[in-house]
Image (cartoon, rainbow, N blue to C red; front, side, top):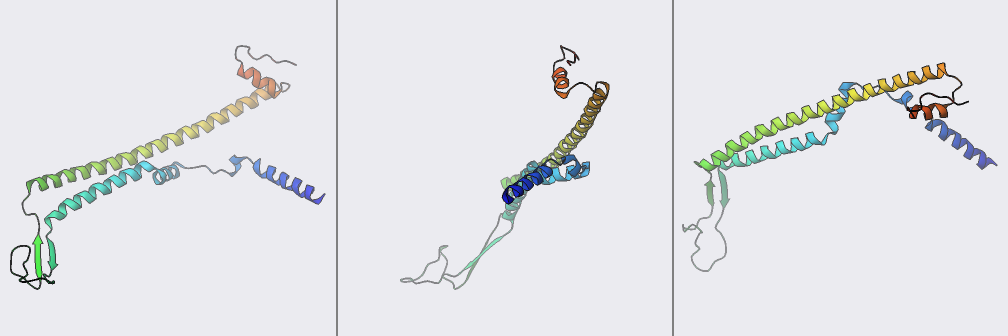
Length: 187
């Protein structure tokens, strides 16, 4: 007997909490909050930011060709006879070599092209951000006008019920769905 009462009590509590209108628990969302959420959760802005980082990395990689690359080492090791270095020079205990591009027209053109690509990527990122903001604002506006239309429909239903209090809900919805038949009420 006690388990049945506990089950019934649990069922009542579950029904009470599930039937609470969600409109009572919901807060109105401002346009600023909608835009912030859209910008933080949009994948398009993340993709355009990744493209922008990729272009910046390729620019840095090409620009680093002008920075000298220094290599150090030693030509020490076991050998039979007189050790020869790779360059054909005399053996040494310590070697330092530097290599960089001084004048390279094609590299200069590639760097110029990646600068342009970087500007395009930043403009694409800004355009994507503006598109996300515009979509969020339009959806927020259509959602708020949708609620006003819902309230307008609710007021129309209340006016209808006040004019014809004897009509049942089933008859009202059936006749509302069939405009050809008009508003005929059966008693």
